[in-house]
Length: 191
Image (cartoon, rainbow, N blue to C red; front, side, top):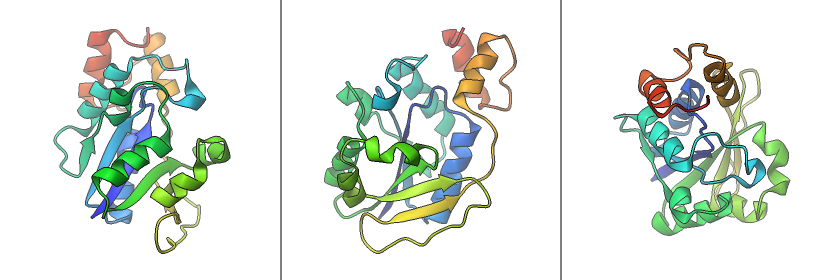
């Protein structure tokens, strides 16, 4: 089994997240890709605008009925700071024979050395680094710990921009699926 794991704040999840997941699913020939919303990311503590459970609900709405994807609340149920190494250890226990791929944005890799137990992360999964178009794709090394550079679509959208658009009364149509936009409106998020 080839298992993709896509963690993040997802505050809110948007079409860029979804397209990156589709690109990774296809490029890596995954059997499934699991979105894992963070309870609290150590490098973003105090920055979330929606609660963990609201972000989890929005990721479920983003994924919808797409059978390629799943959503796992493991970090939210664990509570506290969300460390990638802990999450990957959980997935290694659940899926010991799976080839695991952890999706990470190229921008997040600049801080990788500051993450908790980066060498253990590399032992638990391949790092699938999501890069903007034009970046050369590298081949995976054999066995855990390899890195793969994946070229993803250039989607100029960010969660920060979406929160600001909501705060200033601008439309977020096209930035997020209608189900996520409706949830944001109903929950009165980002105001």
